Image 1: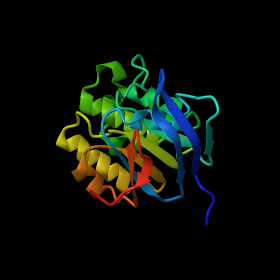
Image 2 (image 1 turned 180 degrees about the vertical axis):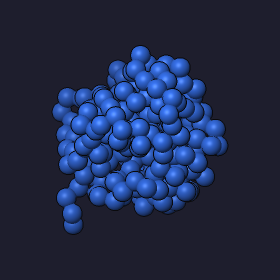
Image 3 (image 1 turned 45 degrees about the horizontal axis):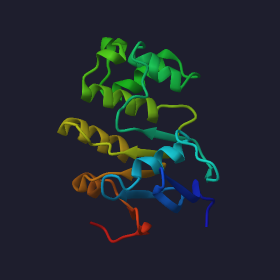
Image 4 (image 1 turned 135 degrees about the horizontal axis):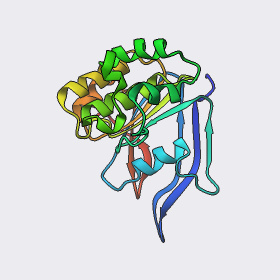
Length: 205
């Protein structure tokens, strides 16, 4: 078996005396596309943030064997004072302006659209800019963590996401309630997260 891109062991996290996650372990291999499903409050976002290093917890072993990219629900990873081009260049500092502009055209940011400030973008445009910054980053992420990626997206943006993921060759962990989207994402492993049962393999929805 190939070396795992991700190993999580013994993750326990919560608020006060009531753990949201209790002794959760997870392993993701190269090429896997993992669906993470569960009710609101089950801890899906907490798990993804811990993997991404945004919620470090004492005593938790998270081993990453590759660069990771994280798409949060709030799409707050852009610097609103910078243009779309400059946000992507910040994620790929060794890429030239021309390389970044050519790549951004695939995300519908052509010519002057790529020079717009991130703070002026609509919801759909912001999503495309965040997705571009993640997928065009250097080093390229080999593991993407997507937290409810279709929330508040119009159909055009959902199609853009599906198209972008079709061309992505790394591993994915996708937390979502959007069954049609998950059905189009080529899921190879379905995991259910529950406060009482923890993380378990489940049948496809």
